[in-house]
Length: 295
Image 1 (cartoon, rainbow, N blue to C red):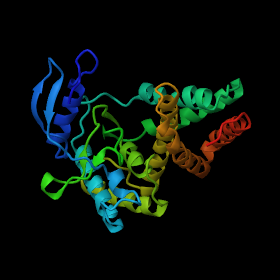
Image 2: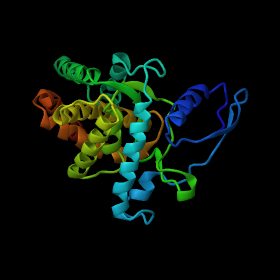
Image 3: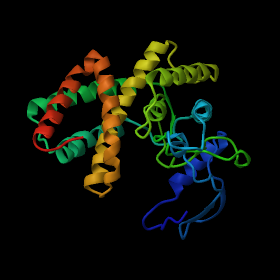
Image 4: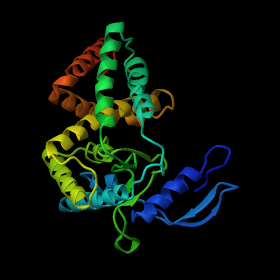
């Protein structure tokens, strides 16, 4: 790792690496370090993320093995969450969750769609955001990787240790227990049938209860938390993808927007309280199509 100290700080990465390593999560080992010059020598977790192995055209993993890889990811997540304690990581608090939601109107709606919201529309959005935040903040709190998905889980060879190898964890926080599950099963880069993701979610819930994690005792309530946490993440991700394209020139993320929007619409359609947000999405996206934007 080459991280010039005047541009990047290695300390957050090292702090989370120690926490996850001590929890039994397979993260890169730190073999040597020179923080004064921003150098870390790390063990290699290979070059094949879950995504590359699981795409239909891949020959890396037969379809029946995908199930086993996701069970491995569930087990690793439970180890990560079981090590949780307050104060060790920044809080995933209202301020941070709201800042992420604000990416949606600022970058997706205004910049990407080119739509200026009316005062009435802004009020509808803020009321929806408040409902979402209330749900998110009511969840039990654990360590949260924050990007626990197929691009950051590595397929490790048999002699290289247990799957998955976990990377890109430097932004980990202490927050809602369902967040990493929404990242994993409502992945922006690969889609699974809801029947399959429900199966994995139930398996997680059962294992988490056995491990003593603070999941809801009723699966229906737990599933609702997961769905509403997903809505927060989908709104954020649409904003981030728009920002990556319009500010940073990384247009490759635009092709992933339709799947994220599909997840968002599906959840909003399922819960009556999110109906006004769904109607607002219809309004801004229809207006965008009329003015030349398509998806």
